[in-house]
Length: 574
Image (cartoon, rainbow, N blue to C red; front, side, top):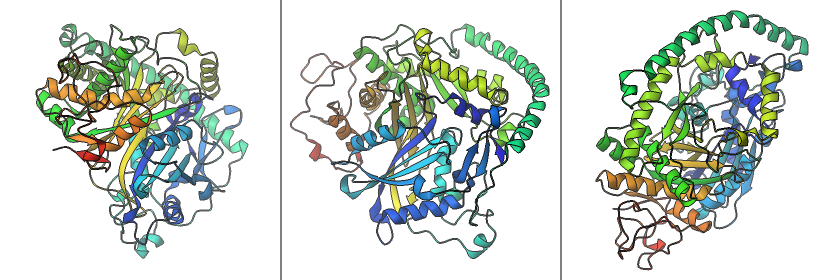
């Protein structure tokens, strides 16, 4: 039995019928690399074996009576792999659009809290004989960084790895299986076990209440300590904000409740819609090196350009910058309450301005660079564990009831947005991963959509490609595919403004997905009569001399068709 940390439990309390607090990932695999051939049963058995060795996948929630304390985890005594690993198929032609639509349906449904908080759907019917996998886990179990690492338990570094040696079976939890991705990527510090588990006995109500009361008895001392500590840290933040650099107008972080309202800053319904995009990591790094910024700065600048396009098309571009919540992975400063070591979520957040009101792409990038510097300085001054420590004092009944009232009364429509959206950037491996022998070709991460912030953008790198997952409430953010369309466009704007060659990476499948929803991808500036990527509208005219526009309805040139280029997932244009 293990009590949830306050931060982990807060993701349970925040969840309402319209606010789903799970994270997800859609992945595409090539099954031709599976030794002996692919079958659903082989995939399920592989997952069952790895899950058996990883306690995080088997733990289930037990609520404390009357919610007198945070819930506890126990090893599920009735764990059933057939419930968690499911089989489905997408309709023809089985492209990214069909996968996104299936993922939309899955992410619109909440997880069953009476069972371990995860599901995996193995999806057949993908184009070219491929398969896909959609994984969904509750945020109380993982954050974005640890979620990607936790999934690595299921993966190997080669299609046919050597089986675990007998010593590891006799002495479980001492080593990761040779050749497994878990041997390369830490998964939360939980030791795996190869021994068959029978589950924990469900604790009695008396035991749960006694444990909760003992934890509550320690809270007053912790509150006093954190009041003093937080007060000193707030003074440090004020010093950072009033420094000479800030007074000069640079390196100033955004503040909560300073965001302008847009059409997608609205209350949520239960529905979710997903879209996907992909750009080359090398192109991002070229920009980073040429401008003296970071990969994260460039990712935020690409998001800013895409959002600017969307706001202009909707005739709602605000005069003030948007504000993004940017989760950051943290390490404990001192672990005063012992919470960080037990928390599945080791995250904090920064508030970063996205200067969509600026016309020049490089000016936007430099403003983001200065803003993230200020946000990092203030985050460092506040301390990595401040949020985690204060989350320990959340009263379960008050927190949960307040969240439900807020959603039910649609209060997000009546005050200034806390922020406009959430943007996460999760680093992934630059080497191939295999699931039961099937090689992973792409992975699109997805985060939760927060009330009043109708869209979440999550980015993950894998083998030199940045995969973008967009998820929104379609009642607040109906143009989720238009946002995905603008990502390569915003990248090319930045490259052109920096005097660099246009992006060398193009995603054929992303272009096909756009066409499936009636959006024609913009022309590729590297081709003389191009078909599927992006030119800058702000500083160049079209080849016929007419002014460039934001229209997404222009027909592709007949001289270059989609069949001119290779039909694999990623097209490298030389």
